[in-house]
Length: 367
Picture (cartoon, rainbow, N blue to C red):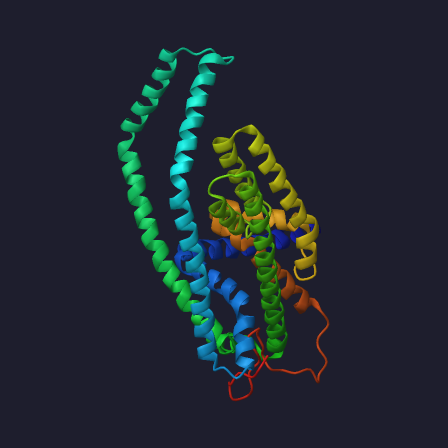
């Protein structure tokens, strides 16, 4: 047997085994997505909220009480924002509908008097065809509505699971991590603990930095929309805030929605002004905020970010795009820690996480 063939068979045989293992992991992850996604989101929120819980614990507040205070405060803030957005949408919807009606009338006039020179009969025929198409697809629309109702029920269940996991991540994160480390061989347990701590620290920095960038984006776009006079400025700013958590794509899509609303409700000039505002905010984000807030924490090449985002979007949609870059950042930080030279023999051996190390009795000490 030629030497090159033996080497090739050995290499590609092992690659096939690795690919099969990855495919099996992916298959299991897809089947358990309803469980894994809430756990992953809870871990992201734990990375954001754990420093506050640890700060309260250092102030002699019992950890359970600190967890309850942070969770209740966070839910109150989220509930207040959602209530404000709903009230704003409800108040601004009549004006938006009236402006859309005016825009439709202007579009009809342009179709008759513009370059197309369509007759009123042709326009009425197009509207009649649209109405017929909608009536012929009523069953599909009804089934889609039923599917949406089922999805809402699943989302509520997954939200409750996420909150349940978040409570334990915040209250007993150190004990959970120590338990998981018990499955690692003793000779590498300390290094794996350091790698996990480094990955979680990177995740916390990424979430806090992204949240700060999202707030700046939302404030900038929201103020610009208010100045221009675009209706529903608050909901559009909230959409920009949420979109900022999906790198590259999220901000672009949210900004495009704001420009489209400005075009429909105000015309071409307001849409151009809003487009300029969105581009300015995106430039501030990419050239100032992200390098300053995220560059030193998440050391990832832009190509790696784009590829991870594309892979996550293709494999798992919006959820994949949301989780791909944080997962890549955690893996990159953990692998760099594992590849670093071994620590000195007198290095501490206590397993740590962002919620604080534990002593030999399992009690958490201040971080």
